[in-house]
Image (cartoon, rainbow, N blue to C red):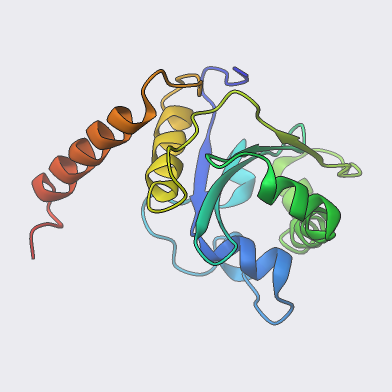
Length: 188
């Protein structure tokens, strides 16, 4: 599962990005993707990165995690509840729609020219990652798992099964709380 390389550059897109690109016609994020709109300090334009990280809200109460490698056009899916969302996206055409829209946006923001690489057919591969931590219940932990997956990915750690997911997520929640309360943002 380890695909990272030294110097990998990444950006993290907001959770509603997936809905805007894959599910709803009316939303337009081209200016945001192109770096024309104002980006928060932690985000950069796609032509300046190798990996795009996307949190996905699926079903009424579940979040999962997607990693798009721009060079390989591989999309790795990390889901703490198993294959259900992956199978749904595969069967209902969401992956095909996402690939088409991402391709259109890459063209519209002149991604290929800005990266100084030839335009390639996307042929995205959607890969469900098998050996990722699984939450112990269907309520409340998926957001914590998405944050854990993101942290592990951007810090170069492998994402792998946990021996004790319940305690690991509790420890992660405590660590996140300390970071938030100790930062300039908290407490309010």
